[in-house]
Length: 245
Image (cartoon, rainbow, N blue to C red; front, side):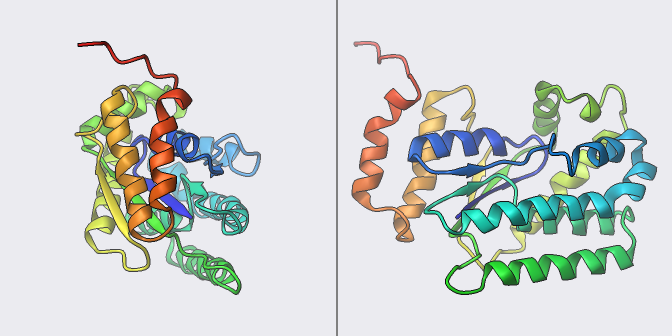
């Protein structure tokens, strides 16, 4: 499995889509319209700190349930990619608790549940840990621009300027997690401010190559498979033909 991690608006879903298309593998996405989470997520954003305190625990449990269901499928597949996962849920839940937006009893109960689910994923014959984690490191102001671009009404900082502080704090939580040194899988950091893989073909290719080379290095992709992926990429993405010199 590959995990794509990053704060809100970092480009996790877009990169997951690109990588899955490039490699021809299965991808699992965060679905904010899922019936289990949709109403709670809207409530979470509805009234700032107070609504986050009200809903955070149950929302995180709902997300965790969906992630676990996805992970149970992903562990059975080669190089499946998840743009949300038990690790990102752990980061977010801890962050909400540290902000005082989740009480200690709820936090303890959530962590116990997360550990039980991770233990289930780790049971034979599966290794429930990711083979590689890709972390999208993004500047907080760049992140705000990306959040506004995707146009989700509940996330709009123009309607609720106090969300800026929340987004910045989530960004710091991910940076602190990445700086702490994750030891259960190789961690590949992608500079989202340097690589515009959404709009720039060269940047896209550089990031895809970086990730796939890491998979080769750790024995999850062969050199021959990597070369074939690169040879077929332009056609898969309908890239324009190179201009003759």
